[in-house]
Length: 333
Image (cartoon, rainbow, N blue to C red; front, top):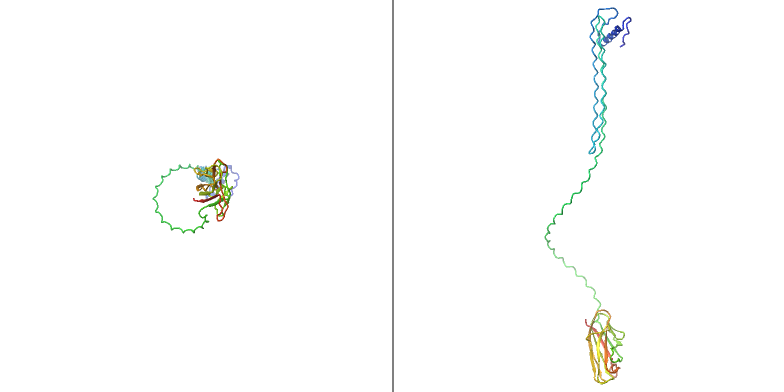
């Protein structure tokens, strides 16, 4: 509503009161007498205008919620509290009623304008999540427990039944037949043999039979045994005293690998010249390695060289030839 203009000829106070009364009329619907101009009786002082009600305080903004604590680590910082809401402005106090001029009642003061509502406070920001706590250190390994005592030995199990006998293997092939009766050799000499008296002589052999097996002649007088074993050697020598004194003798023995065999010698006597004597016997000997050999040794005990001879003779008539020396060898073990 427009405020009435100032009345001409009125004082400042009168114009003010008049304007106020008009505002009150418009508000309350009640006519107020605001005298002006002539002097009336002094009215009673108008009651003091009611003070305007104070505007209500603005609502205090709620505090922001506290930030959640970080899990198992360093606690997160608390959230920043929300700012308080701005308090509402106080209502404008109503103006005191203007004392009426003489004779007029004072105009009641206008009610104060309600204060504006306070602005709500902003919500507090959430607190930062706390950083994860560091992992705990690994615990040290526990000490090994002592070994338990050994359990008692179990009783022996029952023996299983015997398995059935396996099939008999096939018979092996027969080995090659060995020499019948063992190794053997047969030899003879067709020359006449003699030598110096008092020296060691070796009986020679210049012929071998064709059936010999494992025994042979080497160097004309070494009876060589190819395979180790026990052998028997037999000989017969046709000897004749051809020179020297009336009585003389010879010795015969066995040598093995060039060495005289102990206890193998025999002595043969010749009482006179032109006497034929045929010494004949056998020796047993043993070889332990391949190709060992034996020899028949002899010596003339006379004061004349070549006094005794191993004598061969050619065949005559019905008589076959006479070898001066015959030697046979047989394996016996």
